[in-house]
Length: 112
Image (tube, rainbow, N blue to C red; front, side, top):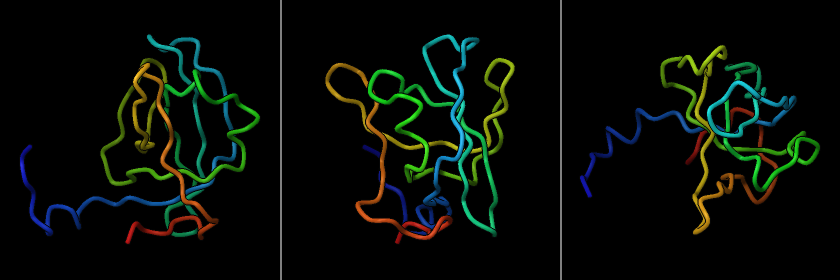
């Protein structure tokens, strides 16, 4: 594992946001959703593609807070432009479990 400096870590903008819209993403190579996530007034609403269909259905994602990297460059994923990277962990079966705060925090809150 390569070590990074504290300064490297401080450059990563990991922010909390609330999922406000979820759509199927049938054009994706692997099953995925298109998410709209509200990161509060400073950052606004960002879009992301997430391969989380194994564990989560669309209805349960609405209102869920997630943690995402908001300062990566935008990335074209097929016909969709992703504007942030939602974070998660792979289970043993390969399904992704989202990183989410235990309690509600303000949208846009930075990981401390």
